[in-house]
Length: 98
Image (cartoon, rainbow, N blue to C red; front, side, top):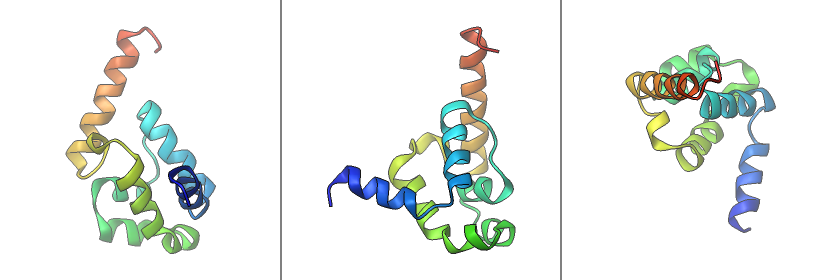
């Protein structure tokens, strides 16, 4: 399995709603739901308690996807998530997209 195939395999293990939320967060800084936010913040207990059944069964896949394919500056702690969102908002405003 090459790198592209592995990434596609990994994405197929994650509920489509969560993949969409991760993409919107990474590209636009849009806050995902509470479970996905907890994953991004490194809050295992928050992620587990906020997860629905489908998301709970995919938590390891989601965490692996975030670790391997999302920019390191956009996850890891609440501060990292907040700073990433503020930076994207500032870029959008600077470009006149808002």
